[in-house]
Image (cartoon, rainbow, N blue to C red):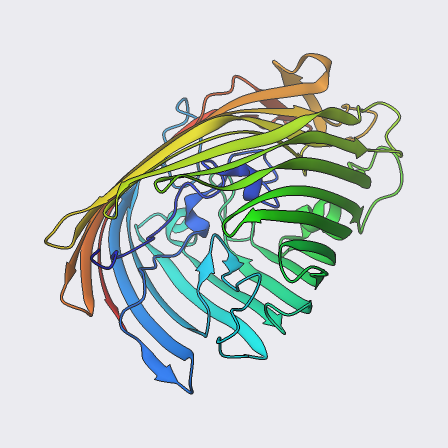
Length: 462
């Protein structure tokens, strides 16, 4: 199998294609803005440090075109602009990440190196510079930076301790054309401390952990109602009946606390208590198929909101991956999730995605994906009662908003030796809702929009 090249670059679909992984949508309720994403390619040969650690670094320059900088509806002439997007990244670790999880074995073989710590650290930064004479457009140029840390102490032992941290400074223009001071710029932190007990040598494991999340907006208007903290307990019970196959039960309790506004009528977001209970199967089916299937129930309790609903519904997901050859992968995922929302009490995402990639013999990689999700917001603030800033809604019966999120991507990458990559990407993100909100100043904001991005890039990696 030839080494896969350029794993990910400018992931426009992060919030739309995989909304269940997002901790916060835009305050407007949009499915996410591609301006928060940074170009990145898979690591090169790297530099070895010590016995097991490897250092990687790289830089990329993308030149592209954005058809709708502010993600506005089609009845307003959208701002179009070319942009440049330089980025750089470094990583160091002695274990790889698989889907954001440290690839530490559940049980070390007798002859394995008895490492005390497994770890992986990644840092990524980039600047989107719009090339436009319009002040509102070039002022939307944004800097983004993120860091991901995964550690496992005493990996594969009877008792292990794990720590994880995801920290981002995400910069995003609003979904209407405005000056520099109006933005969705924010700090997004999520960390967890986990304790894993393996009483039977790795086949059976018990895990308990504490999670903390903080979302802090840099715009004072959004910080007034949307800054929040999450504290929670997460547990997992797993039984492996094969080396790569297990039955799993997961339970999560998350308490969401908003920092501001306890008085009714101030446009406050409601504190909540969320419970998620899931059970399922994860592992291989034969040599070429992997299955990840979970089903359960989600409870979301909003005790301070006498008008809005609680969440008491089914949640779950099914993901199937097929590997017909080492150079080809296909995956399909269906899911139903719920999350605390900055726009109303909570939202559900129900839908699916399909993705595929293939690596040719000459180290060209083609990758594509399509996602369609129905998003349902419940408990929108009641005008004149929960908030004085909103006059009314269109197409929100029962103060429920419904959206259809569609995303598509197609990317081609060509490796030039060990250290260079060139390629191109076309991506689409769209919200097909007919929902609209009218604010007290008379401004009306439809939720519908579509956004196309075309980009060419070059990268050097080590």
